[in-house]
Image (tube, rainbow, N blue to C red):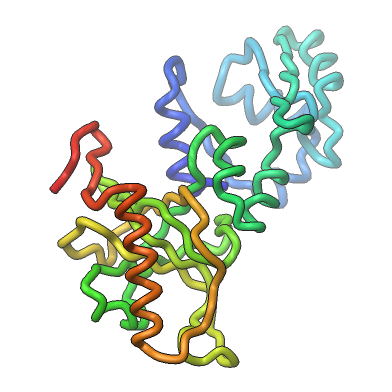
Length: 253
């Protein structure tokens, strides 16, 4: 659900976290029995005292390293194992699978309720199709890595964040179909920014999804497209504002 760098940033912000270790998930690592992983891989980088995992956690080849199996290993090697019960929301556990399903339905607000934050993806701003350049608002076309979870096709209200500032935005997720319904291209993410006057080409940005606005559609003319885009922008302006927000707590011009 998060890019590696975003996940690392979140982990480093937690008080008491001294070190985050990232391992490449290779075929050799996947084939390693859980006992060897704990003793040889973890044991080589940390002095094990306690392992904390979810109650349904499984480690090692074949998923043999259950909480009970790890606890037995801990009794031998001298470390504790805590299996945390999964958080329940609405009568069902909060899992990544459940959140992905909500995002796949475009239900970004429901997903935010489970995440405890709005869903976001990271990507690089690239040159786009140029259809939105004449509407009076800067447009960021964002290339998102395929492994990240984009929500369902449609238009959303949210933010585009870069550096210390996040700008309100109308965000279009989908395939180019504005004037050629039968000639759709590759998936894309296109955000129309409010309150931004610079150049983001080549920059890495975070795109935050706050609200679902409408389903994707095709248009018969540039004029019809412009009318709908301006309507999306008006909704974002009325709901999220029209100025960049400093992530340090101050409004940005």
